[in-house]
Amino acid sequence: MDWRKRSVHVGDLWFVDSAELGDVRYGRPDNTGNPAYGRDWPLSFGPLVIVFSGKTAAIVRPAPEALSYFRLYSAFSPTGADALPRGDTGYTFAPCPSAAPGPDGQAFTFYLPFSIQPGREAAVEVWTSPNARPAWLTFSAPAQN
Image (cartoon, rainbow, N blue to C red; front, side, top):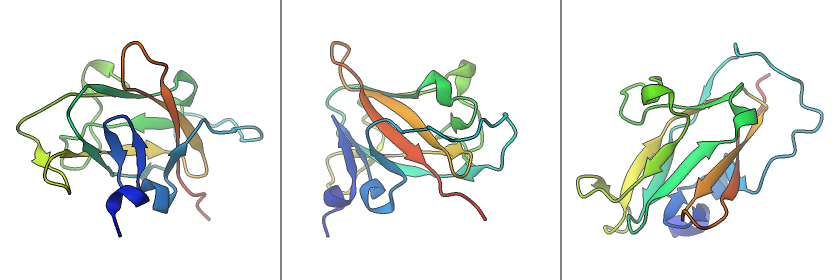
């Protein structure tokens, strides 16, 4: 099966297999009724595979209200557990000739480590153009028993 059909697609970014796995979906979450959690929570890591065509830059960042239970990590860490530089909360994907070629041989593959409190959903905005409105995605993790 074509990897694109199993992926969430925004601009030049493809969140590979996310449509099939359900860890990323289109739209903002409905957090109605979710309990408020503190900053200490069991972590659920999801190293998402991102395919980026590299034609134009794209920015991926969590909504401010999600930062108490959702975090992106450095894609360059061997464990994926290192904080982003300078206290950043999101990523800017830009054309990069040294990145690994993607599944189609033309795009580039990146890994996007994240943590989220199990059972929660986080709103993440994706900017594909400085003049356009952001596309909203929902990142999630299943509740743990």
